[in-house]
Each structure stands twice: as structure tokens, then as C-alpha cells.
Length: 52
Image (cartoon, rainbow, N blue to C red; front, side, top):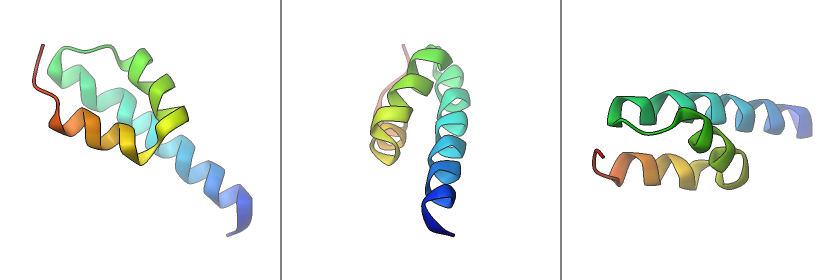
């Protein structure tokens, strides 16, 4: 898989994280950008945060 697979996986996770917050009335774009930096930690934050 190598380093290219790592980046593909990280990017896929960021795209998934862009869709998750929309169900909680949050900005998908902001969470996409946060996910690029934090990855799985951003997913955890999306899941535990309450709806707006």
C-alpha cells in the first residue's frame, strides 16, 4: 500500500467527515478541512458533539 495508500485513506476519511456533520446542522466544508489536519480525531469529535 505504501505512502500513497495512506494519503488516499486520509482523503477518503476527510470526504466522509464532510458528510457526517451535515446531519447535525454543521458545516461540511469546515469539517472537511479539519479532517485533513486531524483525521480520525475529527471523526471522533463529529460523533460525540451534539447537534447545533
